[in-house]
Length: 208
Image (cartoon, rainbow, N blue to C red; front, side, top):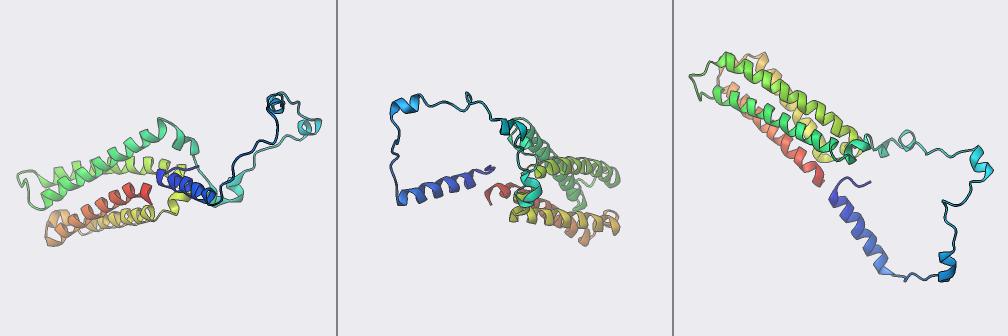
């Protein structure tokens, strides 16, 4: 199953190029009468041996973990996967928007706004956005885990998210919000840069 258009195009082009090297015309080996009167499989009665030992589909996930397709029904569902993408984008907007608003206040803009109440509001919105990101992201990851773990952009995105989390812990541990000094401003720039990098890598996953 191809989940990305570039990979499907590459597979089609490779197939066409391979068979165009030595093309062989299709030749019918039976007459038209024989083909028309050929019994179909739906009319054939199963043998007693087939009735006694029904075939079960092989569980490829247990034998080849790398080929595990995960929750394939979510990826192919006309509503489920687009809904997850909408939730993911909404989480990005809430998280990054609240962080940028607080960062601008740390840099001295809108000084008339009380910093502590604004920080509490920003933190609640940020956590709500991160919750949407985490839940929707895990569901989308479950649709194609093996392919995503082999994707360089996805791995870089995970690394940037972890760095952004560590930077947030550092920001609150040193009480940068109360200091609003030069290092606090550097931390806000670093936070915004890390999250923007994670967003860019997330959009780049489909092209690698």
